[in-house]
Structures are given as C-alpha cells and as structure tokens.
Amino acid sequence: MTIDHPAAVKLKERFGHLHLKVASFRGQTQIEVPGENLTQVVTFLRDDSTLGYDMLCDVTCVDYLNYPGWDKARFGMVYTFNSVAAGQPRLILRVFLGEAQLAIDSLVPLYAGAEWMEREVFDMFGVRFRGHPDLRRILTWDGFKSHPLRKDYPVTGLGERENYPVLDRDSA
Amino acid sequence: MPYTMEKGVSLLVDNPLTTPQLSAESNLWTLNFGPQHPATHTVIRLVLELDGERVVRCVPIIGYLHSGFEKNAEVLDYNQYMTIVNRMDYLEPIANEMAWVRAVETLFGVDPTPRCKVYRTILGELGRIQSHLLCVGAAALDLGAFTAFLFGFNERERIYDIVEYVSGSRFHTSWNRVGGAMKDVDDKIFVPMVKKFIDDTLPKAIDDIEKLLNRLRIFIDRTQGIGAISTAEALSWSLSGPVARASGVMRDIRKDDPYFCFENNWDGQGAAAVDFKVPIMQTGDVLARYLVRLEEMKQSIAIIRQLIDRIPGGPMNVSPEGKDVLPPKSQVYGSIEGLIQHFEMVMTNRGFTPPAGEVYGCCETANGELGYYVVSDGGKVPWRARTRPPSFIHLSVLPKMIEGHTVSDVVAVLGSLNIIAAELDR
Image (cartoon, each protein chain N blue to C red):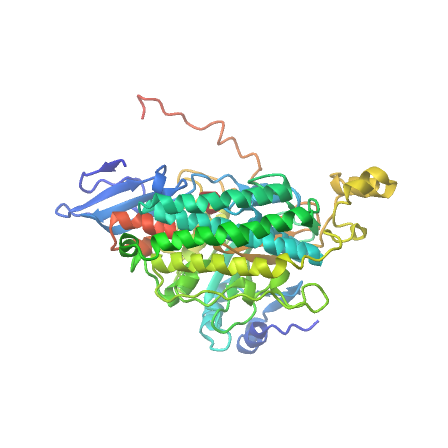
C-alpha cells in the first residue's frame, strides 16, 4: 500500500537517513519518529510553507504493557497535529520510549499549548519532558506516588482512597 | 473569598516552582479564588498574585474532580463507555456522544444510516445551542446581568424536553450506540417539537438576550478588550472552537473534516452537505467570544431548519447482520435469531470486537474540538481511550489572558472560556 499523505512524502525526502516508518489505518496516517529527532522533525513540519502544521492538537501516551504481539518499546507517545492555514490533513507522530529512558524533548518551545498536555502525560504515565518549564503533576496531587494510567496500576487504585491520612483539629 | 494580606506568604509554599518571588518591599499580595466559588461555576482553584487590584500572576490548580474516566474506559466496552462520555461536558451531553461514536465507528469501519446521521446532526446542533445558551447567560450572570441567564435557561428546558422524548432521560442521554441509536424516534412527535422550538421560542430568546446585552454600556465596557488573544497565539496555544474563532482562527471541524450531514453525499445518493456559515471575529476578547457564540446559535438553527423536513425513513441502525449493533427488541423477543444475536452481543465472553488498531476521531462541539484517540487490541474493551478535552486546553491559556487585568475581569474571562470541570479533570 502506498502512503500519499503529503507530510509523509516530504518527511521521507527531507529525513531519508532516519528511515521513518509510516503506517496507515482507516485513512489516518501515523509516522514513527526516533525520540532524539522529534524536535527537528516537528520544527520542519511547523515551518515548512506547504505543510504548515501550526497547531498541536493533542499530546498523549499509550502504555503497551502486555499488548498482544507487541514488539516495540513499552510507551508510545502520540502527537496529533493540525494544519490550519495550509489545510493539510491531520498528522499523527509516534515516538516509542522504553522504561529505562522514559524522557523526551518537550514541545513547549515550539507550541505553547503543549505545556499542560505534557504535564498530564507526566502525571498519568511518568514520562519526563526535557526542557519543560513547569513539569508538575496536574490532575493528581503533589504527594501522589503512582502513575495511574499505566497498565500495571489497578482500576480500583492501590488503597489511596481507604488509607488517606485524616487530619484532625490538633494536627491541622 | 479567603485571602491573605501577609507579604510573601503563598498558599503554595511547598512548591518551589510556584512560590512567588516577592521582595520585602513589594506590594504584591496573594488571593485564593475557589475551588468553591459561584463565579468559577465548577471546582477550579486559582491562586492570584495581585498588585493592588491588578493580576500579576495566576496559577490555576485543577484536578478536584479527577475521577479516572480514561482508566474506566479500559474496563468498559464501547457502548458502556457512552454513559461516561456524556458526563464529561454536561452542558451538552448528547454532543459528547457524537465525538465518541465517530471515533469508535471509524475504528469499527461502520458507516451509520442516513436517518441516523440526520438525527445525530440535529441533536448535535441542539447540544451546541444548549451549551451556548448557558455560556452566554452565565457570562452575563457573572457580570451582574441575571435576566439574560434566565432567558437562556428557559430555552434549555425545552431542549431537555426534546432529548427526554428522544432518549428517555433529560440530562445524561446515552442515546447513541455504535452503529446507530438506543431506539428509533417517532418523527411525528419529534419534528413538531423541534420546529416549535427553533421557530417560535428560541429566536425570541436569542433576540431578547441580544437586545439586553449587545448595546448595554456596562456589559460592553466589562468585556471589550478583556482577555484578548491574537490569532498566532490562539494557534500556538492549541485553542479551538468559538474561543479560537473569536481570535480569527479559520477552523471548524464541520467544514475542515466533515462528518454526518456536514459531509457531501452523506446519504449515499448525492445529497449536498448542509449549508451554514462559520462566524469569525478578529479581536479575540471576551466580547468577541460572546458574539461568536450568539451567531453560532443562529447558524445552528439554520442547520436544523435544512434537515428537519427531510429526515429520511428507513432503519436507524446499521444492519445487525454485520453483528455490530443490538437487534431491535421486537426481533429479540419474537425470533430465535434475534435472541441469539442479542446474547452474542451482551455476553462478556462473546461480544462485538473491532480490529486491532488506533484511530483519532473528533467533532466540533460547542466548546471546540472534542476528540478521542481510541486504541484497540482487538478485544471487547478499548486498550486506551484518550479524550482531547477542549476545556483543559482552554484553561491552560487563562493565566496569559488575565495578566494585567483586574480581579473582576477574571470572572468575565473564565465565563467566556466556558470551562467545564468534569471535562477538565475527567
């Protein structure tokens, strides 16, 4: 099957040495990018005049622990881009990260909107973003130890709800 | 509002990143706004650093309503999660379902029937009106104009009546199903109800709100030039929906990535897409967002008018032959095949399963781009279902919008962003 997504064609031309893997499912194109080249590739996508991916639509992550038949690294980052001015179709970039090196370049210098979305991924999956200005937990509280959307975290929690410290008037 | 006048004392002392850098001579003071305050509408906390009454810095603190919706998605099947989806943006429950079914139907490779598409389009637009009515009304309410809120809320009641007829539930509808709907709707009752609403009562209410607010000196003064954001900034901050369009971003998913009746040839017989205009403003302030929302309601009325008289007959659900939808109840009780099909679908060890794969599907809801990234491993439940929540992304830009404005402007800006905490925290 040939992939005719304009961004895929251009990226193959410009970053031929990276041997980017392009996949398509239900008409949606995903391009796998090595983690160390993410900033370089995204800068090109944003600044190229015909592609013009000027809006970072979404940043998220998927944990593939025990996914049937999985042969890649455990965590898969998902970056969804929209091209508003140039009107190109939506593009999804994938970066796969192993547990040992769970860090990736932050996109905040390129897209201001990445700030909270990356904080949420950090909170939920524990992925660290290099160069993020304010990498704190966002939906859970500061003292929380786990990363709840990981597959090894149970749906019912680890007892945080039951064993929550109760403050009384004297200790408050 | 609890507050502290002590210099250099922050409510966030244990966090070095957010501890304010105040010098002994500085006149800055810290004000805690929320988490429970009528003007935040929902549970949001803002820590404001003020110079007199001017906001120097704002740190939003969220997560008070975090209840693990996305984790729940990993144990509920594609139809069960519908009940959680419409609890996200509870101002327009039915429109949330549209985004979810669009993503899931893309994953399954199901194309809904023309009748289903028309119903979904009409109900989606009613959802948009429902949300905008409250947003416009509440924005005025925060600035002291209580009447506009009541004008808006009256009409919301009528939309509740319509969705109650359609789904049996006034609020959390859960009417959509993968490949169709929970049950078919009787056109003879539905059409007059909607017509009465869009022809008689709603235009009058919008007119009333316009007459009350559009030339009101106080309202204009409180909203013009407040919380302004430029086109380039709006794009960089990933804004979507009316907030982005008020800043001049020309983007509407109904036009750029059309679905249901916004797509040409939606009925398979060459029907043209519904015709409507997308309002854009350039100033990007609170007033612009209000005006864009008002105009969007009128466009939604126009969309419903085009469709209401040409609801096609035929089935609501795609054929159960494809084993994608539950068979109608008459078949379940009246034939052995229907009964078998029903149990195949609902029993946990059979079930209907999509192929393994990952898709992103989104709809233009009242707040902006509501998207779902659904990962399937070929099993009965999603492997992961990420929500792209417009409220979450819009709140991240709030500190930038209110810097330099006064405390009283904070509620105006917050109201114009229409933050829904259930969707914000999920």
